[in-house]
Image: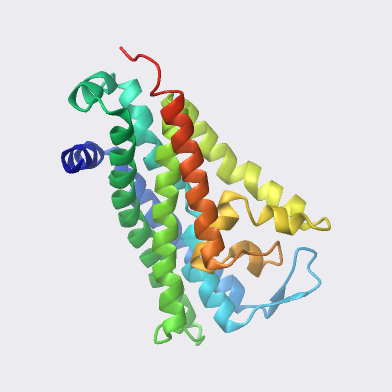
Length: 268
């Protein structure tokens, strides 16, 4: 098992795609965190209808900005995780992989562990980009940064965990959708269009917010404890443990589906 994990990790870090995505994520989060820190510091309330029904406290501003990568940047670890599996089929390396390790369940587990390790890297970089840019703007505006507050550091640490979980979701998704283009299209469509629209729509109907809390993006935000959508008055979050269980459930279901479909049939 250890050899399989090391092999899968080396496959990930010996390509250029992971660090290109990492740099893109860092730049994107630096910009968004700075912009959001400024925007949230300009007003004390917000809401989906602009009627000021959600009060934005300094503590909420900090949690939202520091965890912004979990709300708006999780597509990056999701994609890099998905490419780790689908890339095997595109580059025709899946056959030697299975010849070296014929136990297909072990291959799935090894890819998940390797994906989690790389996901932690994305989590650290993305979160630090948000903290650095966000705290810098808040400090420049004379707003509190709460960097001496344990609660803020808890949000920062849990944001790293949430982004690592998104890498696991990507690996599991890649085991089901083995076409690399399909993985990228599905990841982008779901994270940028489908779920945001679904969360806004569900948040506007009675009982819909409870359903929206179980969507993967909302579950990831629940893990971190900071939410751009909740701060904007859209929806509600599960407790941290609830978000963690929902995210792990998505990983388990997708990974099991990949093992029972893609990796069950003969591959040549």
